Length: 300
Image 1: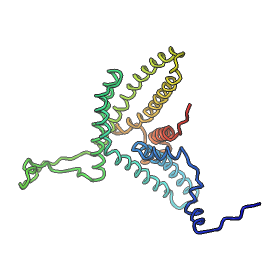
Image 2 (image 1 turned 135 degrees about the horizontal axis):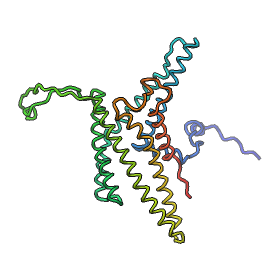
Image 3 (image 1 turned 90 degrees about the vertical axis):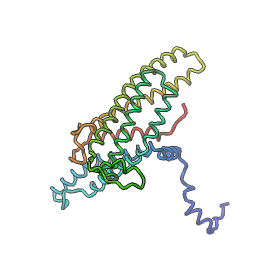
């Protein structure tokens, strides 16, 4: 005997409409994605993916518009969609730089931590100290570049006199003008970033040696009760190691490119080159990091 249909009451209508998300299954991937994008690093990787994917698409959109124009399929050789994508890519890049305004705080925390809990070797301690000081130089230089680029601070200003720092005392500027070179600040900030990455490769070499030593020690104790757990921990450390190699190998060409006045590669947005090295590398880094962070953890 079939059940009688439920009466279509107001509560039933609400459940079928406003409560329709009850039909959506729960997802561990979605939960992990929300947690990841709630972090500063996660948001930065997402904006980086958006920025560099768009920078890769834009040249092809311009090429397509030119070919269609030659074939008489469009009135102008300019892609309006590509123009919008360029603006969105620039906004994503600008947002990433804005979010880094407080990036100096984790560096100070890191430098403080390694002095209290140093790495396992003296060489690693020296490398991390140098990396920390490189980033202490990088962030203020980038912040100054950002402020100059957005006219938050003037590029040219007069030096104040000592009397100007005394309250209720009228004073005049010294008349000596100081000019801040926006390009120089951007260039030197990238050079310190490149120095950090080069030091990271030295760090990875030391990490590789330590992991090899650890691997030998674990393999000598195959009969131990803790052997499976130690092998799993070693696997995770090797996975993290190779992840660092991939990320830094992709970052290094970008850092070197922006550290040179003429750059290493042609920029895709300015020259409409068919393929951008920095765009490919940036996309590779962001995709790799997102996949690693968003992928659900499965027990082994």
